[in-house]
Length: 287
Ligand code: GLN
Image 1 (cartoon, rainbow, N blue to C red):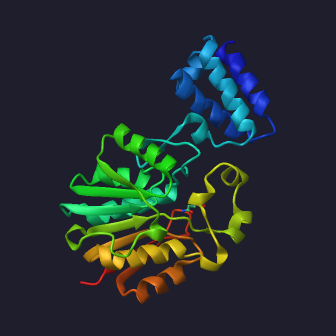
Image 2: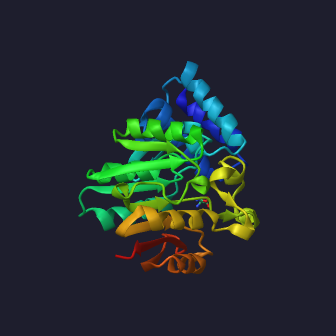
């Protein structure tokens, strides 16, 4: 089949499933990925024959798009903070809000040398790996409860040529004294599960049906469960003046401030994301 016919076929197959603009955007993304043709080169190569494995990849993508699988899982990769990351359904697809969190951490720590960073619930490793890449003086450790996620994160560290120490651990069952005092951290960061079960109705079906629920949801009656465990761990494992950074549920900013105050954290700074929602918070451990 020639590319021109493939495009018509692609559009007609997905008609009614997505808006037209999204269908053509999928076609461009897939052409770039499968045929290495950007938008201009598609127009210049409309009579190129697409057959065999390449054609099969388009057909598979059509089938998967029809059941609303995210394009990032179909491609098996995505971009985050300018880096390429492998993704599959064992890890959340990195979000733009999380890039803002990473940017905040990098700006707050770029001038420091020899810092130790811990990322809790690393998933694809996007936070830990971006920090390791941009803060060459940092020693970065990352943990996750899911061994499947850790496998993805390890591959991502290798692909991005950074050294991150990964650990298979459940934050809810780590004793508060995780480390020796010599090995304390300067920064502890986490984007833990924070969507309440009652907020499921606000979520898009393609997220609900495809992304790992273990990385997304918490019970309504203990929505800050992970934050409580991490704040408690930080009391004993952060250096004095060390910083805690969290991505948070947009509706729970005040509760987060109260939690951090209860454990005597200072300079609490609640920040909005690019959509204007309370999405991240930073706090400092008392000197
Ligand atoms: N921001 C994500 C979403 O709503 C949730 C991330 C999380 O629970 N940590 O899709």
